[in-house]
Image 1: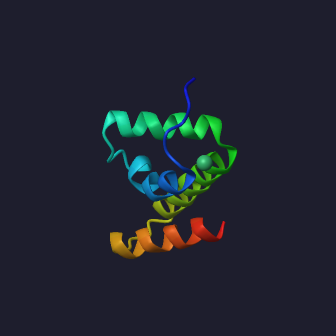
Image 2: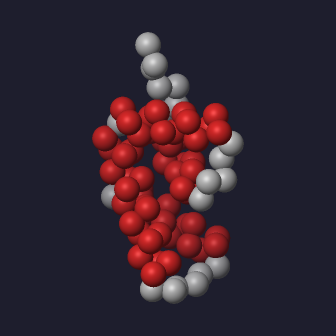
Length: 78
Ligand SMILES: [Zn+2]
């Protein structure tokens, strides 16, 4: 019941889009469900959210692709 249908790997891959609200409602809901069940992914999401907040606060501007790649690398190492 309420079995999460997406894997941790998929969540990590979609986390960036999820946090940028670039996913449709169904896809977001699926990730949210996974985050509620999976502490690892929840921590990653929290980590990325904080990282983004910090970058926004410091007013750092980077090319989206570079930023995306850097965040992805950080998450994979996390
Ligand atoms: Zn997970």
